[in-house]
Length: 114
Length: 112
Image: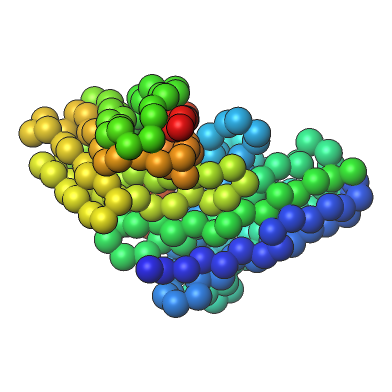
């Protein structure tokens, strides 16, 4: 099946720094990728939709200047958490749209901001 | 976007069949029904997808009645490793801008 690779798996950073998370579709081209975040014991919350070659579409309440998304190629989307603060600590998960309306998910990135 | 309702949690024992029902009363004509499994600290994993009637694969079956207002995920003979959260999603994204929204999910606990 289709594979989505997400890196890093976990990252610890100091408050005020920026962190970049990469999401790659390894064996298929993904014109559309999605970014979710998940807090402990909660469901996934959609943050934004990333389309190759165009600006990302953010969900209501998600700060686009804080969560920068770049989808420069058909196999790579990146999420940069800028000026991270402890409240940004969360599990971030990317997904890519494959064929037949299936979403394939990365393994997630646990971000801890000190 | 069709909203889904699932039981928050379910308990089962090894070897039993588990059926998780999802309600989606306002499902649209072109919506698919997809189920995902998620283990702690991992991304969701695709289980099964269907549009109507019954779909079966190597790990599960999906039953969808004619009115499509609900669906049932059936896991045959569960094992301890099936302990996870199961999400039912309804939606389509042929067109740009489509997306899948996760509901609360069902936390399945399989006991020995």
